Length: 93
Image (tube, rainbow, N blue to C red):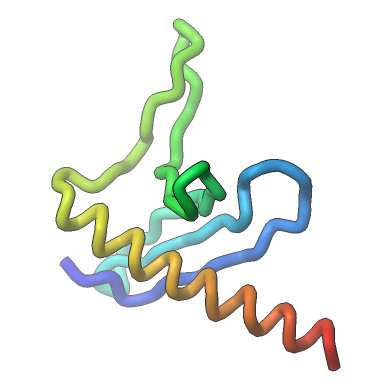
């Protein structure tokens, strides 16, 4: 499985969420609503989730192993930084 596209939309609102990302797998399958969050130890991603009947949030889709999660997070955060830098540049122009 290859991540063939990463799209990031910067979020301009208060709170810890900085962006929302979508990834495409093998040019055939898309996962939307991956959140880029500013935590106490820096940026991280949160997979799409929904609230269950007991009030807990459960991931709808998520990586099975640590290596895949780290790779996915790296790709999304790199794209986030690119989009953030582009937004800053466009705001200055």
